[in-house]
Image (cartoon, rainbow, N blue to C red; front, side):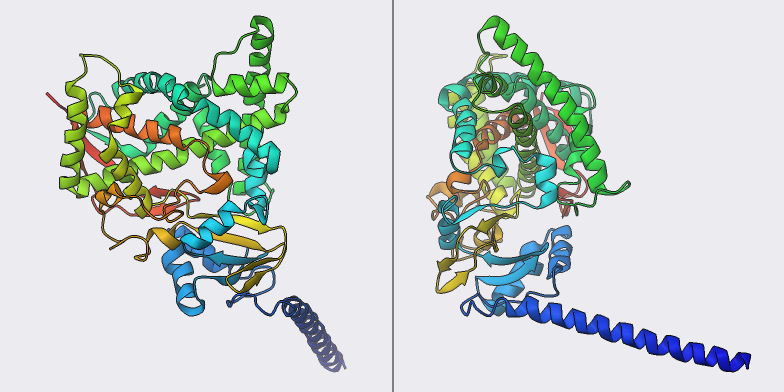
Length: 482
């Protein structure tokens, strides 16, 4: 009797399980068919795979990103199969990936008209919804104007001596007396100090760089705000940053109201705009945080990769060194560089550009279609994402002959418009790229004229988490020049 009851119960549970599974499968198929059928009204959508509902091809994308091979492992195989424009689904959004200078120009120049900036939820929450990356139209133009006016020619002339002092202080503190140093983490310290002190005019407090690092770790993480997750830790660090920056904003506001003059720093200009009612306190805070991230993490990677390539190409290094020795020979002992000196570093900037071409500090950027877009015979539906990538042109022999070869002299001649895009383009062109240029040129000058150096790991790999960086930190041997 007992065995019979058990068998009957097991049979009933089996039937129930089959029913639940059948219902679940039916619901899944209904959702999947609804998911796929809603695209059928657009007959000219580019070819490609959408993958599973919501997830799409996100896992493949993240795997390629972690290996720092988004182009090789994700983009290029799909170009080979579907063409330069293809569809996919990333992070819950149907996405059109575009490649080529013409596509870059079309989408970058039509910012605010056909497309708008579109970042993952985690990035927006951590960088701030009131930062320039989220602003559109007039609000974006106003903030961009504040930044670029600080970095015009007269602004750069003021900045160069400050950057010189900061670089020499950095070398005295972290390089002097050392036999080995790691370029990448030290470049991060330096670029952080330059943007904080030279550009913004703020004092660097102990531990603040570590807080910024914690925020960065969650910028591209899934927005899961539970204890122990990257995003949770980043959100906690963002609250601490907010407290520190808000305090600085209010202190600067008191100073400006009492003294009725501003120092000319970007931070002063932002706070003055707040006093005049042109922007809010949240906009000041969010844009200070975004500027620090944008100016220091990407620039430090470029610096590291320049030394990486110069260490592997001695002929290029010899030519660069000659350029800096000529500049130094015309300076008095202890005399700082001037803005005019940086204009003479043409080959050094070619080395920087070639390093950024081969190792772009960003892989690309997302946009969102605000209307149905007709491009190259295809339709991109309103609400879909558009992803342009630096690799789509940087490593393409259609735009750069022998793209796998390091050749700074290729930049002797102008390159095709929108083919070299490490700083983006159009209205969203990086507002701080002139600061990056001064930072790079100044550091390289003082290092190569004061130190002999060599790479410890010439074949060091580059990895991503979430931005690219040299896996060993780019260690070098150094010794002071006699």
